Image 1: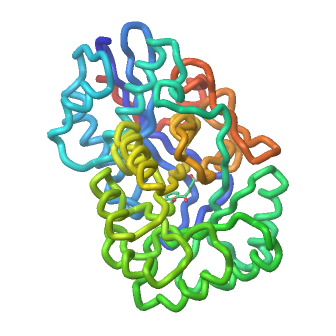
Image 2 (image 1 turned 180 degrees about the horizontal axis):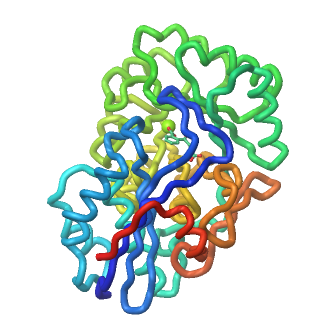
Image 3 (image 1 turned 90 degrees about the vertical axis):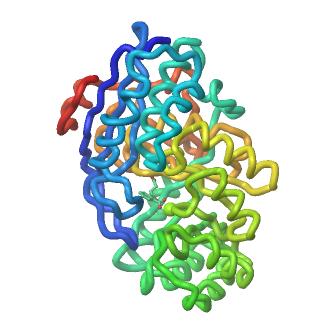
Length: 367
Ligand code: OSB
Ligand code: MG
Protein backbone atom coordinates (compact mmCIF):
# COMPACT_ATOMS: atom_id res chain seq x y z
CA UNK A 1 0.00 0.00 0.00
CA UNK A 2 1.29 3.45 -0.89
CA UNK A 3 1.57 5.84 2.05
CA UNK A 4 -0.06 8.89 0.44
CA UNK A 5 -0.49 11.27 3.35
CA UNK A 6 0.26 11.49 7.06
CA UNK A 7 -1.24 13.95 9.52
CA UNK A 8 -0.18 14.67 13.10
CA UNK A 9 -2.65 16.18 15.57
CA UNK A 10 -1.52 17.42 18.98
CA UNK A 11 -4.51 16.90 21.25
CA UNK A 12 -5.31 17.90 24.82
CA UNK A 13 -8.29 16.40 26.66
CA UNK A 14 -9.49 17.22 30.16
CA UNK A 15 -9.69 14.26 32.57
CA UNK A 16 -12.98 13.71 34.42
CA UNK A 17 -11.02 13.78 37.68
CA UNK A 18 -7.42 14.65 38.56
CA UNK A 19 -5.04 11.66 38.53
CA UNK A 20 -2.39 11.73 41.28
CA UNK A 21 0.64 9.45 41.27
CA UNK A 22 4.11 9.57 42.81
CA UNK A 23 5.03 11.68 39.73
CA UNK A 24 2.46 14.44 40.38
CA UNK A 25 -1.16 15.30 39.53
CA UNK A 26 -2.54 15.33 35.98
CA UNK A 27 -5.68 17.33 35.14
CA UNK A 28 -5.57 16.81 31.38
CA UNK A 29 -3.80 14.55 28.94
CA UNK A 30 -1.81 15.64 25.87
CA UNK A 31 -1.01 13.10 23.16
CA UNK A 32 -0.41 13.03 19.39
CA UNK A 33 -2.91 11.41 17.03
CA UNK A 34 -1.29 9.96 13.91
CA UNK A 35 -3.45 9.66 10.80
CA UNK A 36 -2.17 7.68 7.79
CA UNK A 37 -4.04 7.80 4.47
CA UNK A 38 -3.32 5.10 1.94
CA UNK A 39 -5.21 4.23 -1.24
CA UNK A 40 -8.49 5.65 0.02
CA UNK A 41 -8.26 4.10 3.50
CA UNK A 42 -7.46 5.86 6.78
CA UNK A 43 -5.49 4.40 9.69
CA UNK A 44 -5.31 5.91 13.18
CA UNK A 45 -2.73 5.66 15.92
CA UNK A 46 -2.07 7.45 19.21
CA UNK A 47 1.37 8.45 20.42
CA UNK A 48 1.22 8.35 24.23
CA UNK A 49 4.11 10.71 24.95
CA UNK A 50 2.74 13.22 27.48
CA UNK A 51 3.17 16.93 28.02
CA UNK A 52 5.94 16.43 30.59
CA UNK A 53 8.83 13.96 30.84
CA UNK A 54 7.67 12.45 34.15
CA UNK A 55 6.76 8.88 33.21
CA UNK A 56 9.09 8.75 30.20
CA UNK A 57 11.82 11.00 28.76
CA UNK A 58 9.61 11.41 25.68
CA UNK A 59 7.21 14.34 25.47
CA UNK A 60 4.70 15.52 22.86
CA UNK A 61 7.43 17.88 21.57
CA UNK A 62 10.18 15.26 21.27
CA UNK A 63 7.79 12.78 19.65
CA UNK A 64 6.57 15.44 17.19
CA UNK A 65 10.21 16.18 16.27
CA UNK A 66 11.10 12.50 15.80
CA UNK A 67 7.94 11.79 13.80
CA UNK A 68 8.26 14.90 11.62
CA UNK A 69 12.00 14.86 10.96
CA UNK A 70 12.86 11.14 10.91
CA UNK A 71 10.03 8.59 10.97
CA UNK A 72 7.56 10.18 8.55
CA UNK A 73 10.21 11.03 5.88
CA UNK A 74 11.42 7.41 6.00
CA UNK A 75 8.06 5.99 4.85
CA UNK A 76 6.03 8.80 3.22
CA UNK A 77 5.31 8.05 -0.46
CA UNK A 78 6.65 4.50 -0.17
CA UNK A 79 4.71 1.34 -0.83
CA UNK A 80 4.58 -1.19 1.98
CA UNK A 81 2.87 -4.57 2.11
CA UNK A 82 3.31 -5.18 5.84
CA UNK A 83 4.29 -3.39 9.04
CA UNK A 84 7.71 -5.08 9.22
CA UNK A 85 8.77 -3.31 6.01
CA UNK A 86 7.89 0.07 7.53
CA UNK A 87 9.71 -0.74 10.75
CA UNK A 88 12.85 -1.69 8.78
CA UNK A 89 12.92 1.70 7.11
CA UNK A 90 13.14 3.49 10.47
CA UNK A 91 14.90 0.90 12.64
CA UNK A 92 18.18 2.83 12.31
CA UNK A 93 16.71 5.53 14.56
CA UNK A 94 17.35 4.71 18.20
CA UNK A 95 14.94 5.03 21.09
CA UNK A 96 11.80 7.22 20.96
CA UNK A 97 9.55 4.22 21.40
CA UNK A 98 6.37 6.26 21.87
CA UNK A 99 6.91 8.19 18.63
CA UNK A 100 7.50 4.91 16.77
CA UNK A 101 4.53 3.17 18.38
CA UNK A 102 2.11 5.95 17.40
CA UNK A 103 3.07 5.66 13.74
CA UNK A 104 3.16 1.86 13.81
CA UNK A 105 -0.37 1.74 15.26
CA UNK A 106 -1.75 3.82 12.38
CA UNK A 107 -0.01 1.53 9.89
CA UNK A 108 -1.46 -1.59 11.53
CA UNK A 109 -4.92 -0.03 11.38
CA UNK A 110 -4.76 0.89 7.70
CA UNK A 111 -3.29 -2.51 6.76
CA UNK A 112 -5.97 -4.39 8.73
CA UNK A 113 -8.63 -2.26 6.98
CA UNK A 114 -7.12 -3.13 3.58
CA UNK A 115 -7.48 -6.82 4.48
CA UNK A 116 -10.97 -6.20 5.87
CA UNK A 117 -10.09 -7.82 9.21
CA UNK A 118 -10.09 -6.55 12.77
CA UNK A 119 -6.85 -5.38 14.35
CA UNK A 120 -7.35 -8.07 17.00
CA UNK A 121 -7.42 -10.76 14.33
CA UNK A 122 -4.45 -9.28 12.51
CA UNK A 123 -2.38 -9.22 15.74
CA UNK A 124 -3.28 -12.84 16.58
CA UNK A 125 -5.93 -12.15 19.21
CA UNK A 126 -7.90 -15.14 20.46
CA UNK A 127 -10.57 -13.55 22.70
CA UNK A 128 -13.74 -11.61 21.95
CA UNK A 129 -13.84 -10.09 25.47
CA UNK A 130 -10.98 -9.01 27.72
CA UNK A 131 -10.83 -8.69 31.51
CA UNK A 132 -10.37 -5.10 32.56
CA UNK A 133 -9.48 -3.26 35.73
CA UNK A 134 -9.12 0.30 36.84
CA UNK A 135 -6.11 2.33 37.99
CA UNK A 136 -6.89 4.73 40.85
CA UNK A 137 -4.72 7.70 41.75
CA UNK A 138 -3.57 8.50 45.29
CA UNK A 139 -6.56 9.67 47.39
CA UNK A 140 -6.63 12.04 50.34
CA UNK A 141 -7.92 9.47 52.83
CA UNK A 142 -8.71 5.78 53.21
CA UNK A 143 -12.44 6.66 53.33
CA UNK A 144 -12.27 8.46 49.98
CA UNK A 145 -10.40 5.54 48.44
CA UNK A 146 -12.96 3.01 49.71
CA UNK A 147 -15.75 5.15 48.24
CA UNK A 148 -14.03 5.32 44.87
CA UNK A 149 -13.35 1.59 44.84
CA UNK A 150 -16.98 0.79 45.75
CA UNK A 151 -18.14 2.92 42.82
CA UNK A 152 -15.89 1.10 40.36
CA UNK A 153 -16.86 -2.33 41.74
CA UNK A 154 -20.52 -1.42 41.20
CA UNK A 155 -19.72 -0.56 37.57
CA UNK A 156 -18.31 -4.07 37.08
CA UNK A 157 -14.55 -3.65 37.45
CA UNK A 158 -13.11 -6.68 39.18
CA UNK A 159 -9.50 -5.67 39.59
CA UNK A 160 -8.32 -2.52 41.30
CA UNK A 161 -4.88 -0.97 41.09
CA UNK A 162 -3.93 1.84 43.42
CA UNK A 163 -1.05 4.22 43.05
CA UNK A 164 1.32 4.39 46.01
CA UNK A 165 4.24 6.61 47.06
CA UNK A 166 6.28 6.84 50.25
CA UNK A 167 3.84 7.82 53.02
CA UNK A 168 0.79 6.94 50.88
CA UNK A 169 1.01 3.19 50.85
CA UNK A 170 0.42 0.56 53.51
CA UNK A 171 -2.49 2.41 55.19
CA UNK A 172 -4.43 2.36 51.90
CA UNK A 173 -3.65 -1.32 51.27
CA UNK A 174 -4.72 -2.26 54.81
CA UNK A 175 -7.97 -0.29 54.59
CA UNK A 176 -8.95 -1.83 51.25
CA UNK A 177 -8.09 -5.35 52.34
CA UNK A 178 -10.18 -4.92 55.49
CA UNK A 179 -13.19 -3.58 53.56
CA UNK A 180 -12.86 -5.96 50.56
CA UNK A 181 -11.23 -9.24 51.71
CA UNK A 182 -11.57 -10.89 48.27
CA UNK A 183 -10.68 -7.90 46.07
CA UNK A 184 -8.19 -8.47 43.23
CA UNK A 185 -5.79 -5.72 44.29
CA UNK A 186 -2.42 -4.51 43.05
CA UNK A 187 -0.26 -1.43 43.65
CA UNK A 188 1.86 0.79 41.37
CA UNK A 189 4.73 2.83 42.84
CA UNK A 190 6.00 4.42 39.59
CA UNK A 191 9.61 4.08 40.78
CA UNK A 192 9.19 6.02 44.01
CA UNK A 193 11.02 3.65 46.40
CA UNK A 194 14.54 2.40 47.00
CA UNK A 195 15.95 -0.88 48.30
CA UNK A 196 16.16 0.67 51.76
CA UNK A 197 12.33 0.46 51.89
CA UNK A 198 12.47 -3.33 51.79
CA UNK A 199 10.61 -3.77 55.11
CA UNK A 200 7.58 -2.00 53.63
CA UNK A 201 7.44 -4.49 50.75
CA UNK A 202 7.85 -7.40 53.18
CA UNK A 203 4.85 -6.06 55.08
CA UNK A 204 2.87 -5.87 51.83
CA UNK A 205 3.35 -9.65 51.52
CA UNK A 206 0.63 -9.96 54.22
CA UNK A 207 -2.12 -8.40 52.07
CA UNK A 208 -2.48 -10.85 49.20
CA UNK A 209 -1.63 -8.42 46.42
CA UNK A 210 -1.65 -9.65 42.81
CA UNK A 211 1.59 -7.77 42.20
CA UNK A 212 3.69 -4.72 43.05
CA UNK A 213 4.34 -2.60 39.94
CA UNK A 214 7.67 -0.81 39.40
CA UNK A 215 8.68 -0.18 43.02
CA UNK A 216 12.32 0.85 42.30
CA UNK A 217 14.29 2.90 39.74
CA UNK A 218 12.67 3.64 36.38
CA UNK A 219 15.51 2.05 34.40
CA UNK A 220 16.49 -0.48 37.04
CA UNK A 221 16.59 -4.25 36.61
CA UNK A 222 19.33 -5.22 39.10
CA UNK A 223 17.88 -3.86 42.36
CA UNK A 224 14.47 -5.29 41.47
CA UNK A 225 16.12 -8.74 41.31
CA UNK A 226 17.39 -8.23 44.85
CA UNK A 227 13.97 -7.12 46.08
CA UNK A 228 12.12 -9.98 44.33
CA UNK A 229 14.31 -12.52 46.16
CA UNK A 230 13.22 -11.06 49.52
CA UNK A 231 9.46 -10.92 48.98
CA UNK A 232 6.73 -13.37 47.96
CA UNK A 233 4.46 -10.93 46.09
CA UNK A 234 5.32 -10.88 42.37
CA UNK A 235 7.07 -7.74 41.16
CA UNK A 236 5.76 -6.44 37.84
CA UNK A 237 7.95 -4.17 35.74
CA UNK A 238 6.53 -1.28 33.74
CA UNK A 239 8.95 1.68 33.25
CA UNK A 240 12.11 -0.50 33.05
CA UNK A 241 10.96 -2.58 30.07
CA UNK A 242 11.48 -0.98 26.64
CA UNK A 243 12.18 -4.06 24.53
CA UNK A 244 12.37 -7.83 24.27
CA UNK A 245 16.03 -7.53 25.39
CA UNK A 246 15.00 -5.77 28.62
CA UNK A 247 12.37 -8.47 29.13
CA UNK A 248 14.96 -11.24 28.73
CA UNK A 249 17.26 -9.54 31.23
CA UNK A 250 14.47 -8.99 33.76
CA UNK A 251 13.17 -12.56 33.58
CA UNK A 252 16.68 -14.04 33.44
CA UNK A 253 17.64 -12.19 36.64
CA UNK A 254 14.27 -12.92 38.33
CA UNK A 255 13.70 -9.17 38.67
CA UNK A 256 9.97 -9.64 38.13
CA UNK A 257 7.42 -12.42 37.71
CA UNK A 258 4.88 -10.44 35.70
CA UNK A 259 5.29 -7.91 32.87
CA UNK A 260 3.12 -4.89 32.07
CA UNK A 261 3.01 -4.38 28.30
CA UNK A 262 2.31 -0.92 26.89
CA UNK A 263 2.90 -0.69 23.15
CA UNK A 264 3.95 2.96 23.51
CA UNK A 265 6.73 2.07 25.94
CA UNK A 266 8.21 -0.69 23.78
CA UNK A 267 7.91 0.88 20.31
CA UNK A 268 4.68 -0.65 19.06
CA UNK A 269 2.54 -3.75 18.62
CA UNK A 270 5.33 -5.68 16.88
CA UNK A 271 7.73 -5.49 19.85
CA UNK A 272 4.75 -6.02 22.22
CA UNK A 273 3.98 -9.31 20.48
CA UNK A 274 7.62 -10.45 20.75
CA UNK A 275 7.53 -9.70 24.50
CA UNK A 276 4.14 -11.39 24.87
CA UNK A 277 5.37 -14.55 23.11
CA UNK A 278 8.65 -14.67 25.01
CA UNK A 279 6.84 -14.29 28.35
CA UNK A 280 4.42 -17.08 27.36
CA UNK A 281 7.38 -19.38 26.70
CA UNK A 282 8.73 -18.60 30.20
CA UNK A 283 5.36 -18.92 31.98
CA UNK A 284 5.41 -15.22 32.84
CA UNK A 285 1.90 -13.72 32.69
CA UNK A 286 1.49 -10.32 31.06
CA UNK A 287 -1.21 -7.67 31.29
CA UNK A 288 -1.94 -4.55 29.31
CA UNK A 289 -1.03 -1.24 30.91
CA UNK A 290 -2.57 2.11 30.03
CA UNK A 291 -1.49 5.69 29.35
CA UNK A 292 -4.87 7.41 29.79
CA UNK A 293 -5.44 7.00 26.05
CA UNK A 294 -8.31 8.41 24.03
CA UNK A 295 -10.51 5.89 22.26
CA UNK A 296 -8.01 5.68 19.38
CA UNK A 297 -5.18 4.35 21.53
CA UNK A 298 -7.62 2.37 23.66
CA UNK A 299 -8.93 0.50 20.60
CA UNK A 300 -5.40 -0.69 19.84
CA UNK A 301 -4.85 -1.67 23.46
CA UNK A 302 -8.05 -3.74 23.52
CA UNK A 303 -7.00 -5.53 20.32
CA UNK A 304 -3.54 -6.34 21.69
CA UNK A 305 -4.94 -7.47 25.04
CA UNK A 306 -7.01 -10.11 23.20
CA UNK A 307 -3.83 -12.19 22.71
CA UNK A 308 -3.72 -15.38 24.81
CA UNK A 309 -0.98 -14.62 27.38
CA UNK A 310 -2.70 -11.42 28.57
CA UNK A 311 -4.04 -13.43 31.51
CA UNK A 312 -4.34 -10.64 34.10
CA UNK A 313 -6.91 -7.81 33.79
CA UNK A 314 -5.55 -4.70 32.07
CA UNK A 315 -5.53 -0.97 32.87
CA UNK A 316 -8.09 -0.61 30.10
CA UNK A 317 -11.16 1.12 31.48
CA UNK A 318 -14.32 2.60 29.98
CA UNK A 319 -14.03 5.89 28.06
CA UNK A 320 -16.06 7.68 30.74
CA UNK A 321 -13.57 6.73 33.47
CA UNK A 322 -11.14 9.12 31.73
CA UNK A 323 -13.03 11.64 29.60
CA UNK A 324 -16.46 13.26 29.50
CA UNK A 325 -16.68 12.56 25.79
CA UNK A 326 -14.43 10.21 23.84
CA UNK A 327 -13.24 10.98 20.29
CA UNK A 328 -14.40 7.60 18.97
CA UNK A 329 -17.80 6.02 18.43
CA UNK A 330 -18.99 3.88 19.95
CA UNK A 331 -17.27 4.77 23.21
CA UNK A 332 -15.67 1.94 25.18
CA UNK A 333 -17.83 0.57 27.97
CA UNK A 334 -17.23 -2.00 30.68
CA UNK A 335 -19.70 -4.89 30.92
CA UNK A 336 -21.36 -5.81 34.21
CA UNK A 337 -19.03 -8.85 34.46
CA UNK A 338 -15.89 -6.69 34.35
CA UNK A 339 -15.08 -7.43 30.70
CA UNK A 340 -14.80 -5.22 27.64
CA UNK A 341 -15.84 -6.33 24.14
CA UNK A 342 -13.10 -6.54 21.53
CA UNK A 343 -14.20 -4.62 18.40
CA UNK A 344 -14.80 -6.93 15.43
CA UNK A 345 -15.09 -4.36 12.61
CA UNK A 346 -12.05 -3.84 10.34
CA UNK A 347 -8.95 -2.24 11.86
CA UNK A 348 -9.39 -0.56 15.24
CA UNK A 349 -13.11 -1.22 14.82
CA UNK A 350 -14.39 2.17 16.03
CA UNK A 351 -15.06 5.39 14.10
CA UNK A 352 -13.19 8.60 14.86
CA UNK A 353 -15.57 11.50 15.54
CA UNK A 354 -13.79 14.14 13.45
CA UNK A 355 -15.72 17.09 14.96
CA UNK A 356 -14.85 16.02 18.44
CA UNK A 357 -11.22 15.41 17.43
CA UNK A 358 -10.99 18.91 15.93
CA UNK A 359 -12.33 20.39 19.17
CA UNK A 360 -9.49 18.90 21.23
CA UNK A 361 -6.74 19.60 18.66
CA UNK A 362 -4.18 22.28 19.58
CA UNK A 363 -2.21 22.10 16.31
CA UNK A 364 -1.91 19.84 13.32
CA UNK A 365 0.41 19.28 10.41
CA UNK A 366 -0.07 17.44 7.13
CA UNK A 367 2.79 15.62 5.40
O1 OSB B 1 2.25 3.70 35.51
O2 OSB B 1 0.74 2.56 34.63
C1 OSB B 1 1.24 3.66 34.84
C2 OSB B 1 -0.99 6.45 33.46
C3 OSB B 1 -0.05 7.27 32.90
C4 OSB B 1 1.28 6.95 33.01
C5 OSB B 1 1.67 5.79 33.69
C6 OSB B 1 0.72 4.94 34.23
C7 OSB B 1 -0.64 5.29 34.15
C8 OSB B 1 -1.72 4.51 34.74
C9 OSB B 1 -3.11 4.71 34.17
O3 OSB B 1 -1.59 3.80 35.69
C10 OSB B 1 -3.57 3.51 33.42
C11 OSB B 1 -4.80 3.79 32.58
O4 OSB B 1 -4.65 4.27 31.44
O5 OSB B 1 -5.89 3.51 33.06
MG1 MG C 1 2.77 1.65 35.92
